[in-house]
Image (tube, rainbow, N blue to C red):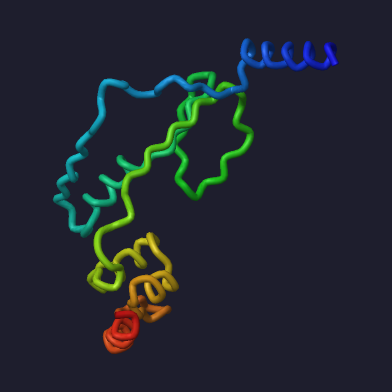
Length: 151
């Protein structure tokens, strides 16, 4: 029994000395509690790009490799072969929203489907918005019917 306790104690000691690739130290200034991110101004003809740029700044995944390399994969990238000592940083903006989902303007839901933020099924099931699956055009009569059934 004493040998087993000694083995466990040595393993814990070795793990605390060598580390396991994780860090608990802050990767940001700890005296800063809130950061305001202004919406980018866009003078392009591409509608909504200022919101996309702001979202990219707020939603961030960053890998800081031991050799100094920094990679920023998207949330859909599969990252493999991450060496020990790599620091992982993730910022995620957003929240649960405000008010009942079926009160969200149908055009906003349509825009989010077009931008790949929500699926057609989520538009229908959660928001009560019917869109043509091929063109993503708003089907107003079906949307009104869905919303009247949910409300």
